Image 1 (tube, rainbow, N blue to C red):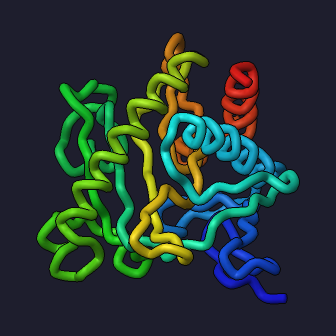
Image 2 (image 1 turned 120 degrees about the horizontal axis):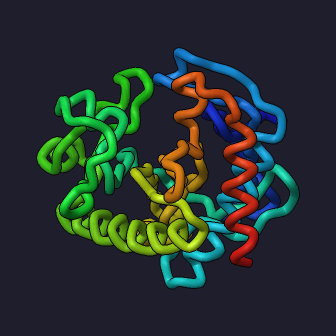
Length: 236
């Protein structure tokens, strides 16, 4: 059987239920739009387990997601969605591409979270887009954009508090949303939340506990992911 979709870090597979997909987490790591690649043993397991813990917490907090349940170390069942072709980036502290674009130093806490939208396109390098672009491209309506912003801020508030409980500072992160195949009028949080798509710094030491360890050749990538999982499991 061929995967319905294969991305840089996950595959999607059909199930007996046309409204449900199996999402498989791979051991592949990529950075800089796929220019840098590697494989790490247990990466799929770690990201799957971390994301499962977080999505379970989000569901219990009343935030609708595509998550159904984890079925093994590297696979979860998810509701089938049509992905909204916009990545939503939430920034709490200056880092990464924000610093490159603005010339600001890393580590400055913002007066309020910054929300960015980028076009979900590897070919174009996921360029930043504004509301006018999004409406013109018919990717989302004005009402959808307001909902995406409000939902992103709600997720941010929840995750900042969650990670703070385990001694981690949420610097920034990426979210993806999708329209339920069973009800296209309903948008839910999709994709994953893991150290692949979040910048996490240890509150006590400032140590980076995310994919920047791979991007910047800092080493200890899986050790950092293991530590994030260990801390989150202590909350369960």
